[in-house]
Amino acid sequence: MDWPEAPLILGSFVQRLHRFGANVKVAGRNEYCHVTNSGRLRELLRPGAKVALVDHGRRSQPLRKTRYAVRLAFYRGKWVCIEANIAPKLLKEAWQSGRVGDLRDYDRLRAEVPLNAHTRFDFLAENSKTGNRAWIEVKCVTLVDSKGRGFFPDAPSERASKHLRELMALAKKPKTKCFVYFVLQNPWGRSISPKEDTDPVFAQTLRQAGRSKVVLRALRTRVGLKSSEVENPIPVLL
Image 1 (cartoon, one colour):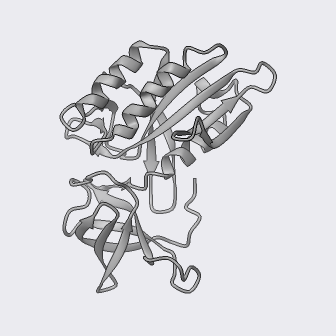
Image 2 (image 1 turned 180 degrees about the vertical axis):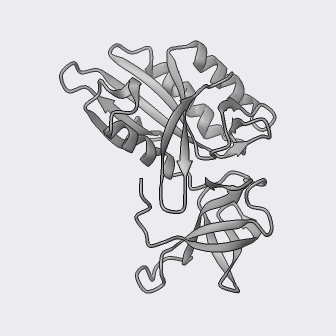
Image 3 (image 1 turned 60 degrees about the vertical axis):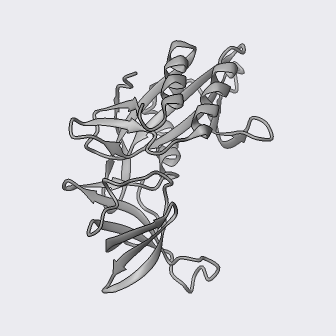
């Protein structure tokens, strides 16, 4: 997908203030910026790191608390997309172009579909002729070690474990499949695994899901200052 906003603005990361806020030096001035990811991102958002920002503009959106939002971080010579809500958009774009093999049989894809009053999943895919359905959850992955192993989550997430448990229950229903797609937005990664030391409950639940009827998939993306797109599938190693 091409970034729909005007050209991204380059800045120098100064300090993470809290989960969703940071100071970034932009054009010689310190600016309070929105961080579009609740993960720790310690290897990416370090003092002095080059980042690329979306400039929402004060005049066009006067109700926003922040003018800038961090979208990309420059890491080991490549851009990494830290914006978590880009991952579902990339999967949808790949589905529309027929590049997601597991989802080719589904001709409709609805976003942000509620399962109940407490849970909504990223997508519900449907085959209008057969009535088959597929519940889909998408996870954004940015953390990659020196060996090219991508890990999720970057911070403890009870919500992620809850989604897995609900998908395992849904997968038992007739004409229903369930998928978890890990979208790796760090081009250095070659695989995805659960991060045991960060969230052992999620790691255990993911392995349980992998032994059930829940299908686990991972896709690597190519990231740049003008666009990002799904590049190729990579293995999920449990």
